[in-house]
Length: 376
Image (tube, rainbow, N blue to C red; front, side):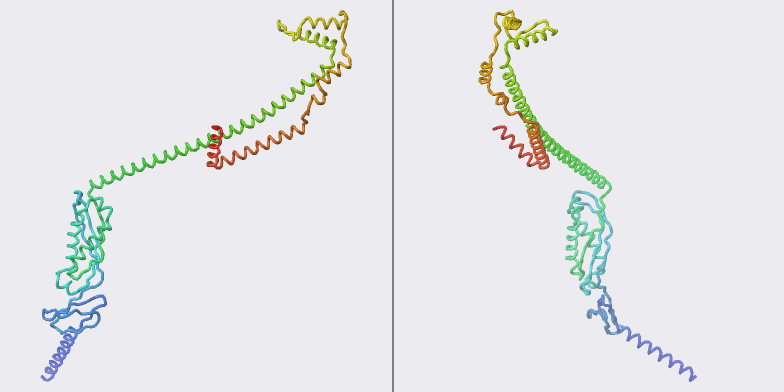
């Protein structure tokens, strides 16, 4: 009997110790560094428990911990009608953070769900006031507008909306097809514009090339005409000088001829004329004088005049000294020197032509100067 009583005493003592431990443990609350806790006793708000070890009244307390870290909420996809009556499926992501645990617990039943529902209605309202093109092109503007609207409405809940990001904008199938056709047409239009611009530039470059080619061709023609004229001038000078010298030589040689020599020459001329195939003959002197000279040479005439030395001297004095008459005959070295100067001038002209070809502006200026000079 005594053993049974001792057993019950030990059991009661163990239960008392366990209950005491439970009561003491229930009064100890540990709050993590990223949390804050709402402390209520017998249904009444007492205070906010901060991070670390907190002692509260055991058994009659209620402690609710709230996470203060940034939370990511997913806004489900929903169909929204834009201002221009285009259906669009939209979903978003919200980044929120609890700034006032008391309001987040007492002012709203579930701040997460409330924020998601508020984001859905706000998203529908914002997109409904915008056209489809504006929605697709100004997503950043929409994000800022949604964030400001949500942050203003959730401030009374002790929740701060840090950011709102529209994740996907999916127009209806028919709208997509129309957009693709529009994009294709726009790209075709740009391609046509680029092609036309390319053809325009090609035509300009081609015209510019033809212009430069004609300028170069005209410059080359001018140079060739100058060189050809210079060559003809030199050839005419040399030919005229040769003719003059030939005539002077003939005059000097003819001065010593007498009537007999003239008669022999005349007969040789008649002989060569007679050997020709032509049926018509033209005599450069009177036939009677020719016959008279021949008769005198043959001795049939009464007298045969002879030219004396004094007559020859008179002729030489009237015509001039043969050395003076012939004039300076150009030597081969002088002709080679003149040809070398012409070659040098041609090389200089070719060099100037190449320089002008490499510098189109100078070529155009030179062409303008030449044109002005020709006009003057």
